Image 1 (cartoon, rainbow, N blue to C red):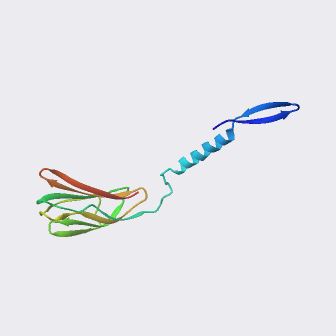
Image 2: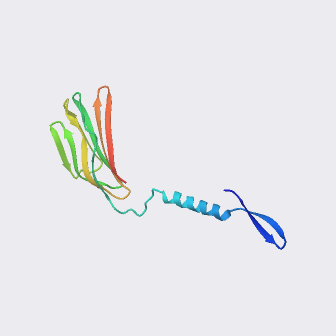
Image 3: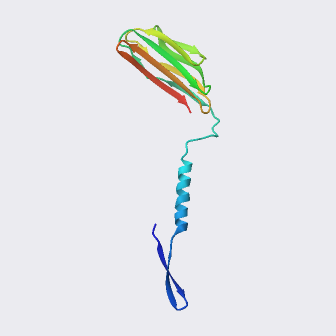
Length: 147
């Protein structure tokens, strides 16, 4: 921001008065501060729960394997319906107590996936994971819903 020069007459003399544009600098400072402050992600007034209908990616097994499914919450979220692929197909669990976990053996070529419908409270979240235990390592996937 540049200074500017103002010419003033004092009687018969001309004087050069150099003035800094402090008002402009103050305006820019306040403007930038307001923008930065308004970008805050904190929303302490959020009182609306989040409706969740979510799931992990689906993969097919390439051998008979043990699969561990998990459902957890943060800040008392609830799941009303949980669906996963078991050894004989789709399994539905109604209103599971969280944290919830199960390990099942899945035949070769069958899908692995877990989905849920639930509600996450303000500031809370729901999480789903699976872990496939192959002899040469573990393949896992996870997802979440909430705030």
